[in-house]
Image 1 (cartoon, rainbow, N blue to C red):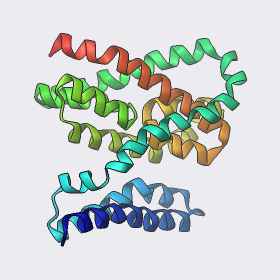
Image 2: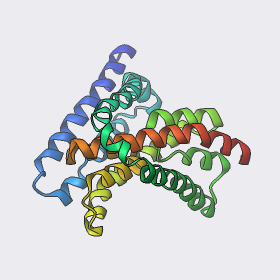
Image 3: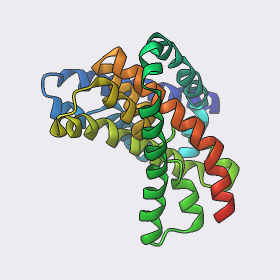
Image 4: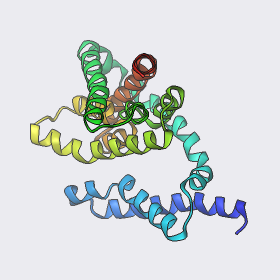
Amino acid sequence: MKSWLLLATLLALTGIAFAISFRLYQKFKAHPAIQALLHPLVTGPLLVTGVLLLCGIDYSLYRQANSPFFFLLGTATVALAIPLHQQFHHIRQLASPLMATLLFGATFAVISALGIAWLLGATPETLISLAPKSVTTPIALGIAEKVGGVPGLTAGIVVFTGVIGAILGPLLFSKLGVTDERIIGFVTGICAHGVGTTRAFEISSRCGAFSSLGLGLTGALTALVLPWILLWFF
């Protein structure tokens, strides 16, 4: 198969896998517990992985074919400013508690990742790659590349973190009796970045806006501070 045709096929594979996954996800809308496990970012990558393994296609080639989607990740992140602007009058009134939550959440995300990985004997390169796990993918990849991490590992752990947050977050909030959409959204954005924000918008536009705020502030804070900390220690 000609290289351009293979690349086009791999690009189409992503869209087809997502379409199938999203249809499956919508089918179980009446069963939230099952639906959470069938999130498109869970089933979609499994479908793609299965095809790549079956056809013996290297991941690096697949990533090359899907470079337009990697570019659009940044564009989609910027677009989250629209619902954020619509809720700005609510956000301004909660500046102090939001900043306190941000500082704790962003710090704990890094410390917990590094602490657990270090206890399990991870190498410095792995630790660096895991540190930005709770930051949206474009920022996390940029941090990993700048400080000597492994972008592939960073991308994988970022997506995994987001999926786990999107699946378990709503269930955990329900168990804890947390119903305020502002709290749910902001914490989800801090912990589960873009994937969690997508889930937050399914709850409401307000929840999604606060999740966008958490995502954006966590990304900015981490991008400014984390590289200096990693370079100091590693």
